[in-house]
Image (cartoon, rainbow, N blue to C red; front, side, top):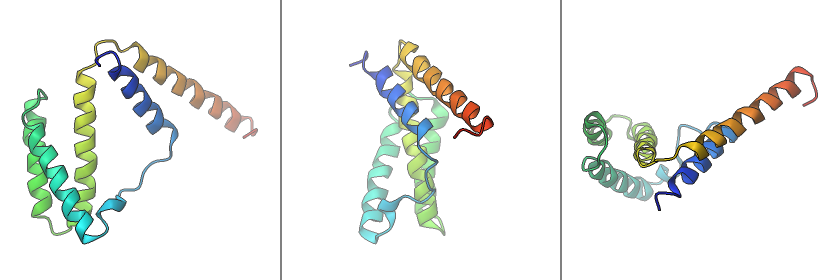
Length: 127
């Protein structure tokens, strides 16, 4: 399983590099029922993160942000940003498990080459 992790990270980096930026709002918090379930699942993930091998600051910040979401005056916006923080924290945890970074660097090199070619097309007005 540890040999597959760099390829998962490479795929995630490549996917995030070629798709347009995502909206701040997440659609599965629009209805009250979905909001409660998303709130509970992300809260459970936040408290579970405190028992991982991440940095101590992240272990403290993630449960704090969950409690802050609970007490916020704008819960939908706080929950949307908290979901992205939770996803980023678990992505960081996944990156901690990588031993061989070559596939990730190859994916980043391919992305930079693609972006360079798109820039040349833009400069030459051939897009």
